[in-house]
Each structure stands twice: as structure tokens, then as C-alpha cells.
Amino acid sequence: MKTKDYQIISLGERSFLVVVLSLEMTDYYWTALQSELAKYNVADAEVYFDFLYRNGLKNRFFKTKLMGVSLLNNSLRKCKATQECISASDKFFTLHKDVIEHSVLSSIQKTFFRKKLDRTNILPTNVL
Figure 1 (tube, rainbow, N blue to C red):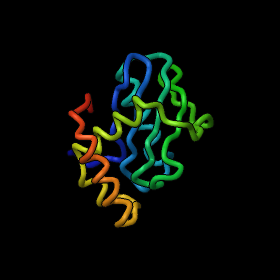
Figure 2 (cartoon, helix red, strand yellow):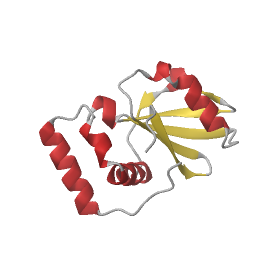
Figure 3 (cartoon, one colour):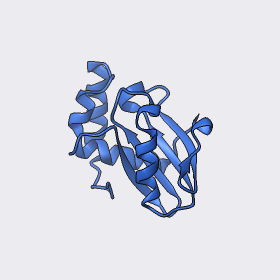
């Protein structure tokens, strides 16, 4: 996997999941993320963020809107993840378990999270 600050996963026509792979604040890569999302040519979409890597199991999922080619930074809010988001995120981490090792999760949390992924035995997703 190419090392970058995030990975975009399409959840459908008007919905995306951004798996954050950096300890940096979102301002650091916000412009690059907007540019990458603009390539999808979606004028209005919901964008979910999974901050497991940076925040751990608490404060994990957030959501904002993509309006035109701009992400609404001031509207990034904690949210309850949809089952679709959780499944897509689990699929990503199943394919990239090495990412978990570099996250802020404690060693016990990493072990439990990996076991959870192994139990779900998920197939690959449409990761860019």
C-alpha cells in the first residue's frame, strides 16, 4: 500500500469513507483530499471519516459534506457510523493489518481489533 495520510473508499454514488492514516490534523492534508474527491465528479456527497488510526476506538467516526469540490471543514462532526461505513472500514483494515500496528491503539486493543477482523473474515472492498 502506498503511504499517504488517508485512503478514500467509495460507499456509493453520493457517499465516501476516508480512512485516516496519519497522526496529523486534517488541516495538513485537507486540500489534497478535496482535490482527490473532486476527481469523482460528485457535486453533493456525504463524506465519513474513520479516525481509528489517530484517535483510537473513541471519537472514531466523523462526517461532513462535499459541496461541489469543497469539503465543509467547519461542519466536520462526530457521528454514529452506518453499518456500511463500519463494514468498509473493517474490509480496509483486514487488507492492511500493518496499519493497525502503527496506530494509537494500545497493544491489547490492537490484539482485540485484529481478532475481531479475523472473526468477520471480510472480502476485499473497492478501495482506490
